[in-house]
Image (cartoon, helix red, strand yellow):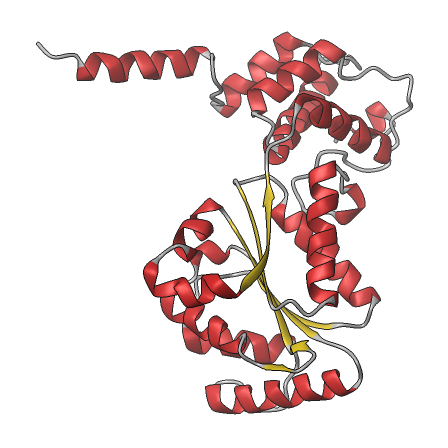
Length: 291
C-alpha cells in the first residue's frame, strides 16, 4: 500500500522469512556457517535454538537455498505436531521415496536405500525439523534412531532440529539423554543489540529500494524501536511496517516517536519500563500484599 509513496520496489518489513532480506549479523553469519559445516562434515545432529521471532526459520530458508544449490537431498518438516506415522509419511513425501508412504517399515527401507545411493555418490541427505520443541517424545526417539544410520565416513543422515528454548529444556530430560549425547553442534540466536537492530532496519530499507538520503527512521526513533521490540527481529518488522503505514496515512515520509507510541498502543506491546508493564507489575504486587 505504501511502497509507491516511499519509492520502495517491495515491502521492506514483511513478516515472511525471505532469504533475500537476510541480515548477516555476526551471530547469524556464524550460525549459518555452523549449519553448513555440520552438513558438509556429516556431523549428524545439529540444534538451532532461539526465542520466538529471532530468525530461526529465515536461517533454515537460507540453508535450504544452499542445499538446493548443492543438489543435496533434504526433507523439511515444518509442522511438528505430528504422530510417528505422520512423521515418516512426511519424510517419504519430501524425499519422494518409492514406497508405500503409510508404512513405517517400507519408508525405512526406502530411506536407507536412498542414503546408501547418495553416500556412494559422495553426497549426504538432510532432515530439517522446524518448531522441534513441539515434537512428541515418541517422535524424538524415532529421530534419535535415524541418527544411528552411519558408515566409517560419518553419519548418513544429517538432522537439524530448530526450536524455541523449550527444545533445549526438553533435550535435558533424562529419557532423552541418548539423543542429547549425539548433538555435536548447537547454535543459539539472541535478540539484536542496538547496533545490529539499526543496521538491520537500514539494510531492509536499502534492499527495498529506499534512497540512502531518505531519513524515514531518524536515529532516535530506531533506538526506541530497538528498546520496545527488545531486539526481536519479528517485532521490529511489525513495528516498522505499522510505522510506514501510519506515515503514509499522514502523508509524511518521516516517522516519529509519537507515531511509534500510537503503533505500540494499537499492538498492545509491552516492554521493560512501559506504562502497561509498570501497571501490570503494580497490580501483581498489590495482589501479593498481605493484609
